[in-house]
Image (tube, rainbow, N blue to C red; front, top):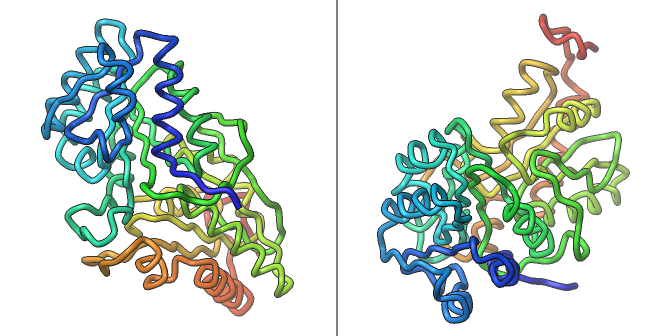
Length: 326
């Protein structure tokens, strides 16, 4: 099975695009290694800006570049950009509608043993709450390439979060990609599994395990968390049971976005799988996922438990939810 790192796929694609378009700029905050930008800086020094360990300044510099017609991509650890420079993102980028792309690498628990200071597990919640900001989590390297090409022509501020290490390919080369439009990767009538980022691969593997037990699952890659593909989510709720899976705190991320929509439009039995609201267990990504049940086996068990609850509990019509009754 082919594997590749999303951050490497991003930088490779950005370099290719920048050679053809001198308006494309990459900015780093002493993060060339983290963001795999060494080759870009060496080959295209006139289109590279090193800002030092100063994320807030980098946002302002990028906004200035955008105001002169450039297309800046700020690249660095997601944990620092989402928290240290949140006010600058809110004012200089989103409020001002600056054409800047923030590429947060090593998101979630990618930094492993570096622990809580380097975990980015609340970034989606924060970025989703900023008006005017698009939020994207690619699933693999091939999708990241397609996303990067799209971002080069997209106008407006975007926050992208990706992991650090190699992950199995979910998509073939050159997959279709549209901001705000989720991808349905598998269809089933018993339960709908909705994932984002690197959890998408695990979720596909979960569907295979469930099928061995006679449970057919729909699998959805919700790569864009803002704007959310509401139509796909409402269709997925027709199964009567929805499980969300994310490498993020259980509060404010993908699960919260889905639950908020379904509570108002189509109340549905649901389980939110993610990282608990606590100081997290420290270890490699795989160790953290295993500890909290974010594995195909753990996700499958949660889906089975949800289906049992759905079978045992009556469901009543809820006022305002004309699409739902039983």
